Length: 415
Ligand code: SF4
Ligand code: SF4
Image (tube, rainbow, N blue to C red; front, side, top):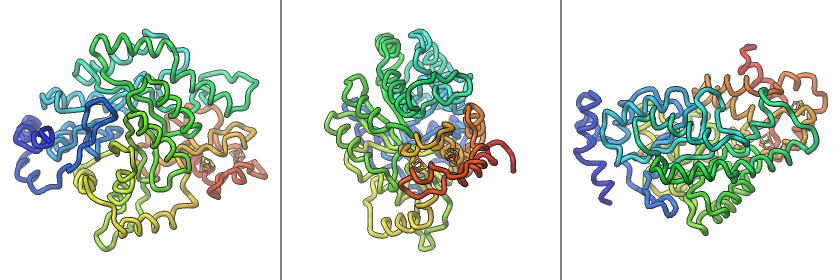
């Protein structure tokens, strides 16, 4: 309660002044503010239920505005463009580092996706954290994530040789489990914690492969303080099991990708908001400590914060049902991966469809293009695939082949 009162008080209005935001206190006073803070597992950190994803951060003043609304958790990564630098500018100017929870990733800024692969040295993990600290103008990260577990990056990367033998799915499962628990990582974490450079360790996954298996492993290992997973009201069946296990072990759980593709459907003629309904649905699930959503503008900030602390109503469910009706057969479930072994050409179906979502709906074109370019097998071969077995494998009936061909055209600038 103290923290919340503080965040809503003059201290952060002062921060806004530092950043030169005019009429700040007057405008902020009229705006919705965060109404709920929840503890992340047993870390002692209390995060705003609606929190700030910095994937598209371009302005330090937006961080000041977010803090004036009570947001205190900021999720960034070295491979989110200049996100760490911009957040670092805000940290430096606001001088409120102790009121912020900063989360970043074990990730190399030079590449996209730059998440350190299996086989990285202890010094690699330490080096990337030092890089983040320098860009963020801070001495410590509250949380550092082993990110993108289950993406199968090493298997699908154009930069690495394929090792023949196991089925693609089994190879990913084995590699990612090792990545989660590898000795060099854990030893680096111990060193970084002792040096006060990171406080807590997280594991995160937007799938597409083995999200449940990998997150269960992280939770039960005892090494991880929290997890962050992609899920939403179009959830795939195994998510509740992860929530239950996290709660049972008092491991923190943060949700991302809560807008199920974030399609602009104009569903709220009566002034209701699809986004707020989706957030409220996520936050009512037992075991969820908060959610992270990419915030690109003051308008989005104002819209999203209104969902904080609010109950989920029948009208919210009606909006979500409407969205589901329109979009159910087009949305690839992040974390699903059921189709992985159906493609003999090893097209990374779910990851390509996620990059397509970033490109089309998230305004994250650069990340989408770089990610697609890094994949060895492109979806152009779908054009000549006669029977498209991936479509029979998809339990949600997605027209996978045509979705992939559209994605290929967009992500390789063929249209
Ligand atoms: S259409 Fe064919 S080549 Fe393309 S992903 Fe599906 S199975 Fe693989
Ligand atoms: S295409 Fe279908 S089966 Fe494949 S990951 Fe997406 S939702 Fe799951």
